[in-house]
Length: 343
Ligand code: ZN
Image (cartoon, rainbow, N blue to C red; front, side):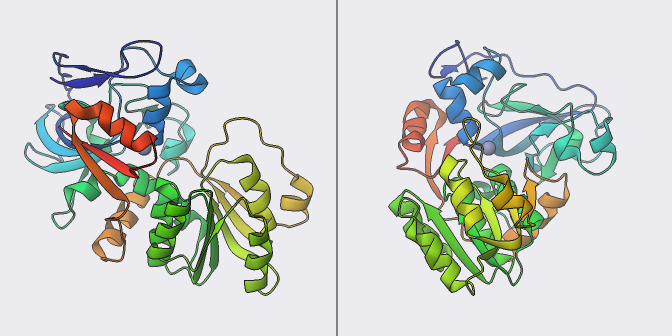
């Protein structure tokens, strides 16, 4: 099969035209991949930064966001049959640790991630355990099913924070931040404020439903948000940038007793005033990792089927996998937002 492989401990990926296809075990499902999304994680793997060098085994097939069709199933698989259109939760656990057994498998201690710890989806075939397979509703398009993974991150963040009838600040409108705008709107957020340093993304955030979209480099925005929220600050902060300054600014714009859900990953240790921003403020801080298995998936399906999510302007490009270099360049230059590859 064709597979996009981390072929060496350095920059780039290579397309292997003759990779051996994975063989499903008794409880596994072999899926023929149709479309796969390029994630920020894949960009780190491509660039081979410190995180990638410390985590990614050389030789691995990359990618974790996808839609495909079941090709073959192991003998103990009962829920899906060949021909069914599916996506899959890319966090794979044995299901035996504390969190897996208490409804929190998304933070299991033994999590293995597709395309990070085990062979992923930038290939003609991928093999995943039956538990992780998500049959795709017939009314949901392939392009949307291919991005369930990051859309699930956005849905999980928004639902954990609780946005209904609340003012919300989304700091960082990259792929997941933009998805969070449309998800928060669909989930009943009253007013959505956004910040970023990329003007076209800010314009798109406005089109997706943000009432204000500020350039974060001009700190006057904090005063403006507070002025528009009774002088108190927003009810909810969704931090999606991981930028050092965004933590300080975001918490300054959050009201006392507010809720902050943090998804963006800072590149290094952040300088942060705990006294002012958390303790005296009495706010609740949530760490967001992955998607709830599988509550988030049900919520996501319902939100997509509601017709209220606007994803067309977020999923911007698609290339055949042979043009993976162009696909990654489009994503990494910022010209594309969510870039798909077709198998
Ligand atoms: Zn992803």
